[in-house]
Length: 301
Image (cartoon, rainbow, N blue to C red; front, side, top):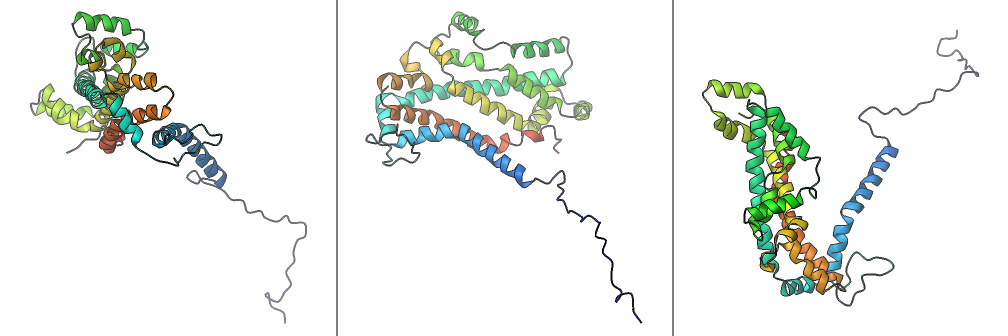
């Protein structure tokens, strides 16, 4: 007696074998796509960080080392900090850096205070011409800075601020883009919060200080970083306004290196690194607030 288990099983020869295909979900990355992502990431890193690393390497290379070899060498064979000392001996780096710091502090403070007040007023207060004011801020973004540079210089000169650090900082103390950034940040706050504060008797200034500002710290950090970088790296406007070499900012003062030591790019690279250090310090200090900008609009108790 044969059982079911003992019975021979028929295999259909015409049946096609079942192919098991790997299916990837929406959150799954295929190996090919992962390779493409890493290749693009490395390419972007080479474009962005590559020039900085090359300048740093050039500033550390010794005088007897050739920097124009057929195969570029990133690591210096004879690392030295002598070029940095030579830069400080050639030009008054500390004086120029102090002037740049004064201008940067004025620009950052002006943007934080002015852009915050303007953004809060346009987004949270009701007054006539509010949309017109917002449209004017948007319209100024269309104009490049070179178009208004002559009118800015005439205005600064009429105020008696030519050849002064305040005259250098004045045009950039309130940026239209920063006002729009603060406008969007304040607009993300729920209107019910303002209504509840008004019921409790809070005026506009109290709503701005105790409700608005604590909720937009990320955007304020973004404005502070961008304003500092723009003021610190600016070259054209300080070159136009300032005529006294003792009041030059660091970017303008570094032009003496390219004129005096045009055949020695090591000194120019060292001066560039000296100008870059404050930017790294500011970003490292504010970066934890910078990346919290995506959380703007949250109601904090």
